Image 1: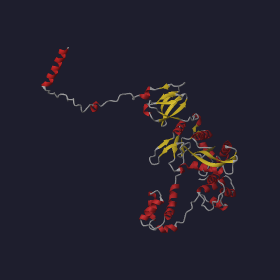
Image 2: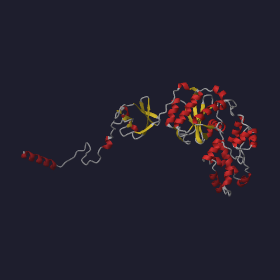
Image 3: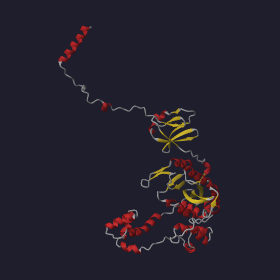
Image 4: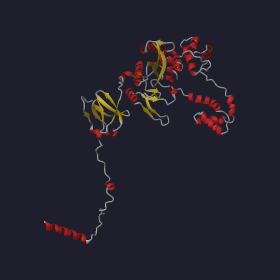
Length: 438
């Protein structure tokens, strides 16, 4: 997406939208802006649409998708519509595959005709989801959103960390200039302090700062080591949406959109600190006390029933970046001009070093495999004999298998060699000659 397009999307600059159908997000924005007292004309100017469109959408209880008249191309698919409806699910609503298979059945129409026929079914399939409600204190949802914001005299891309409590719908958000791990940790801890606690589980998408692997086929899920350490510190359960299913965390998706459409339009801030000060005021004075469109209650009122894990029982997380090292052939790693032993089975592998409370912790795949007291001075070694256990134990030999098999002088036990008498006579003659010389 170009910067100009992103500016239009994130700052909601007036655009010519009347040639397009009203989408669900625009319908929601109209409803929410009107709920907080925004005049209809102002909504029309803000969203770049006609005031008649605003009036029509306000009369509708829910958003209704535009339905295309299919009569034009249905006539070209006579006799194949039932087959298409059954087959399209089997091929993942892939119009190219369906077009190729239709040609095998004698179809003479175009690919575009097939694509237009499949499109409404694909849209329904991709947007269909079940609203998932959670009990008080059970779940929060976390996500990032970004927008171009006026900071002083320049437009800067600001990344908004958002966390919404699943039951009460109370929202916490904070702006950052990046989405790095240190910002992710700070966003969590600021949200925990804001609410005075946290829920049993938190739901995320598949950002690299949290997930290393999430295979949709095998269900394999591997957390980023640093994020796993963070979640273990607080003790919450980290859950993740299936890849390409962001609607699973629809509560925070809606919360981030609400922030962009209700807080940011027309605003200008001195810097990020000023933005976050104003954002906190907006959360308290607007977001917390609005009538939520789903619960039909104020989030601040439902929050009274939230059963959060109190934050006072958990100390702040200390983020210490891991230091990478490769285990040497003698099963050691170097740090600070000193050397520390590692279990010999990790020779040649890369491990992470972390320093905490006077100790050096050596980690592999998120698990501590060795711990040493930090050495003072230089050129010293800290060695644990347990790290070499089993390395020097001689391997049992298969002596039967290793014995020489083709020694020409070898004779099996019990076989008596019958030698010629001349052999003994030669030996006796050599012995007598030796005695004569001496």
